[in-house]
Length: 260
Image (cartoon, rainbow, N blue to C red; front, side, top):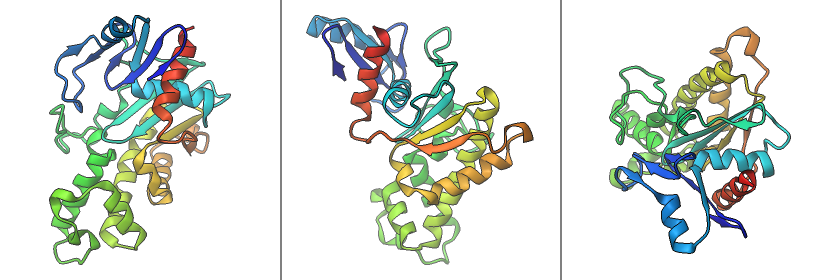
């Protein structure tokens, strides 16, 4: 959250830009509709502007990061969930109700993995988030029980996506396969997104991007393979230039600037 002389800017999961509310966020313990903007305004006596956290990150990226100068791009945030912000013709797409851009909840694999928060099956978030990477690792460890793996040295309840990355760096076959599969699913999804809005670039942000080419190579391959010829080799696939520790602050401050 960033303060200016005029207002507060807030980026929050399932944030409604028009209403200033956080609504039914599947990855937060809050229930129902939370009037967060009005609560902050009452507490500090300043107007407050709120949007989805990935939307705020997209505005921040457009002002301070890899999307500077771009008028058409998609921001994908990979963390506990998968968020997104869509910019077209220089404008962030909010939709009629403020919730446009929930690309993480689009169904990529019909009848696929059950999402822990929404109950949907086969959504992108169930595979490409840090949580999804952990679940893929557990599935592959069970599938390849005869294979040795450094991942087996980590108690199941403690296994996290960063362990998968560390083991992949050591050449662990199952850990590498996790990123290949994750990249495949994410790449297929990005192909759909490209054919929807024809962006100049897709900017990836968040913890899983630290895997670098381990995830980027299969993402790029499967994105291009699933595109129509008219879209191939046109869309840049880049990592965010914003520091992970600063992204929320920069995104919220950019939201304040956008609102002025």
